[in-house]
Structure formats: C-alpha cells, structure tokens
Length: 80
Image (tube, rainbow, N blue to C red; front, side, top):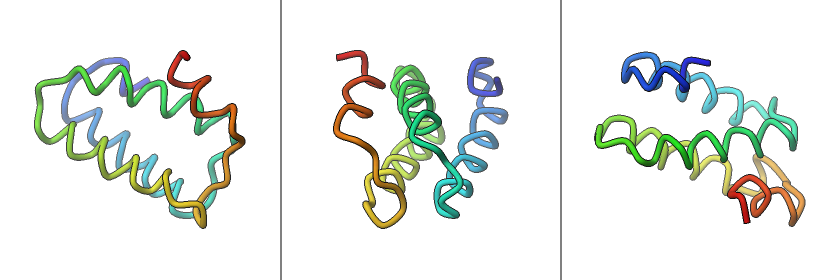
C-alpha cells in the first residue's frame, strides 16, 4: 500500500521492509511475483533514491540462495 502512494519516504520505507523480508527468506512465490510487479511500476519514478532501492531489492531477489522462484514467476510478474 505504501508503494501505491508513490510518496518517496513511504516508498523507501516499504522497499526497506521488503528487502529485510527477502533477506530473511520470508517471501512466498506469490509475494515475490507481486513485489516484482510493484517494482516494475515504481521503476517509472524519477527519484534516484527510489530507483536505487529498486536495484537493491532486485539484487536480493535475483540471488538463488535467498529465493528460488519458479520459471513462470518472473515473466508472469512482468506481464509477459
């Protein structure tokens, strides 16, 4: 919900929380799909702080030791 506001301080706090959850392995496959979709929408931001958090979050999600997503999860989240 905080990401939907597109208010930079709320978005950054929300992405920080998602990073912590991801690093703890607390995200399910459906949560990761939803998070990637949200990151795609947020990537249209012009705020450098938000774009940096997006890259940091994606790097956590791309680590196979952190989360093993099915092959269909990523394209589905990206709308392909």
